[in-house]
Image (cartoon, rainbow, N blue to C red; front, side, top):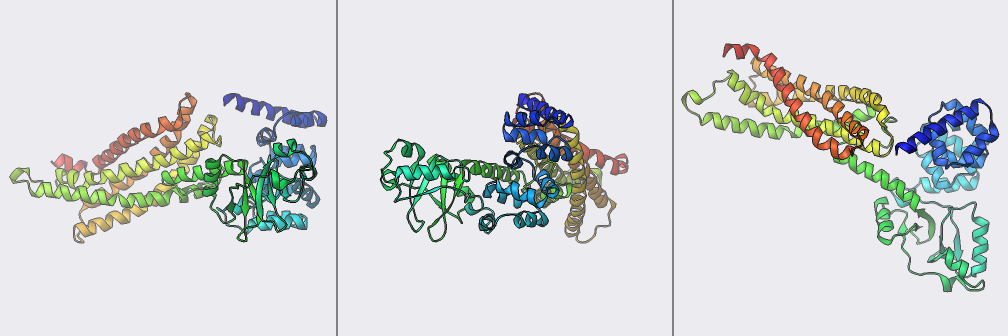
Length: 486
């Protein structure tokens, strides 16, 4: 992996040097010698102005191949910079399903610019995909494919495939339809190639077909690819007419998105579509704070259970063993101890959120070990804002609990000291746990260990110990007078 990173950096430097030296022919040769995905990644490390310059030195068909691999913010800048004619020429070289993926992430002014400069046929195809629900098969299908007729011969079919090869998805299996566009079968390219030219397609095709509908959920589409080990899947509309296909490269993207979404949900994070550094601080705060609030409020149950049992133990004690109200023993057992589950649980969940996001970002190469400082700065800001939200909610929660428990008599300073202890400790431990959660996966990656394996158990141990220590240390400050008084 490190070798690939070094190559990308070297490639980026080479591209920048060729642009600065205005060596157009050398730049074109360099681009031809590398995969479009690598060129896009290398160019992404350059200033946006230089990216635009580089693209203008390349042919439109080459730019189209590279363009789909850029991040959405770079794509947006390119479209903004390009003239209407350049946009038209660029998008004529891109497959419709890729155009739809791009437009779904673009602001309305960019979408209008692209649609305005698309051909009527292309605009119709784009709109036909955009109308489907986001998580449906129809939203990820390609409408640019070659379909064969049952009445054709093998020779006719091969001629059509040759004619359309530049305009359709590169696949090795083709779907066969009748005159009414009803799906009748599937045929492999090798079958056509080795068949006698005059043989009818209907005699060569395989009538066993796996298909889904445009409304089918994407997760079911993934299951079909796994179960039948296929590389393409035909899509039918509600009238059972063939309207598109899904290729394995589309499914890989969906698998990645679904896996990221599931991982985020498991960590108590509302799923976000953008990469780690592309997601704003406020968006991260919203995605994390909702679940942290829910989990913190849920911890009230544990707090109440501990408090009830503490009172049972105390009430069943006799004589000197019974704890006197508002004594330091009462404060520790009745006020502080029940709050331990709240502070440790909240800190643990907060750290787990950060750890999960960084582990996933590392696996997707959205974050690298050299981004340590950027990660810490982002986690610090997210933690600070999330902490304010949680502390505010916790204050209301604690006042309500004590108001019920002490029948409205909450004027005792010990109660307010307990609330202050929990609030300050929660804020500090939340920040520390998020920083540790972001640090451990990067540290594990740096020393060649699996970030997921190392981060989770170590994080829990460290955060639990720190949150408990911080909580009781702050309590020590507030209740020092009671301790001195015995």
